[in-house]
Image 1 (tube, rainbow, N blue to C red):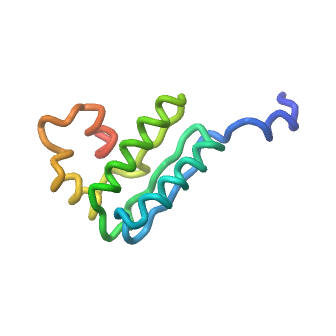
Image 2: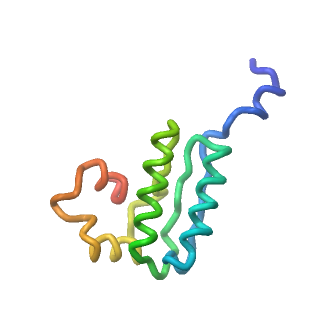
Length: 112
């Protein structure tokens, strides 16, 4: 059994960031900082975008950048659920779900 004092110093396994409403350039810096902060205390961040109402390319860039940065640090940023609603529409408009998209990227967005 682990010493209770050592558990407090370990990173938690995962945490979830719920993003509701607008996920656009205006909120990107704040949400990026939140993801970084959550990654400092967890091995994985699950991002829940199911209740977003407006998503632009800066949101997609933020998620891709966070994913790459997390992987470089031996951590992960993933979507809690397959992209749907406003996020899926933005991905389609931006060409992120085209036939040219890599299997790893499609899996990140769609969980397939």
